[in-house]
Image 1 (tube, rainbow, N blue to C red):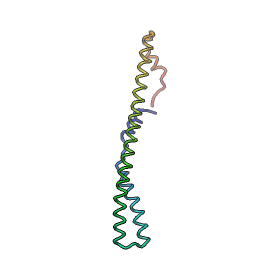
Image 2: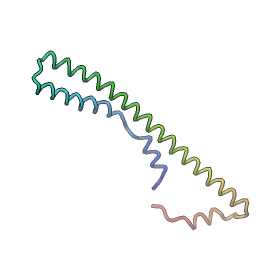
Image 3: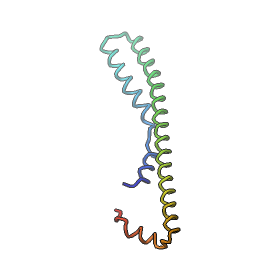
Length: 115
């Protein structure tokens, strides 16, 4: 599993469809419910319009929460990758200090093939 592509996938997640999905699905449920309860036309439109506004606000809040969650995960994954690179560089420097000039050649021989 390549961690670089996993981190890039976190950056590319599209959350633009969260708000419309929440608004349309929830308002459709409210509209169907009010239709089958035989509300008058004026009451029906007021209830549906109010539900659109309420669920629009809820959808925007959910979208912001998801975006923030994804940003935190992206930053965490990036920090983990940078820490791993730093530890690898320290290990490489320690091996070179011990006199292992062929550390890169040894590392390449012990690595399994990547597909």
